[in-house]
Length: 113
Image (tube, rainbow, N blue to C red; front, side):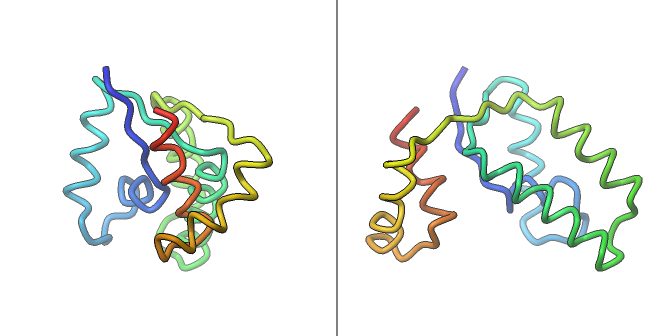
């Protein structure tokens, strides 16, 4: 079993039909049966917010939000905790790679697996 770092934008494509590259993200989802996804705790906030925004924009119903969150809960996803000092260093990583701090949190996890 290998571990993959997945970000929220990839996961949101699993549920939002008209997203670009959806076929790729669904392929990743299918392969999670044999692999484990690792994420920062931030991932859950981002997925929840993405579904909330999709509901507000009338792309999905509230029942779908609840259903999708239940499906997320059942996935083989493991949170890797990042220490405060690591989180505070994300700004440097973000600057070095022209990323947001949020994306740097995912990049930092690559060194943890």
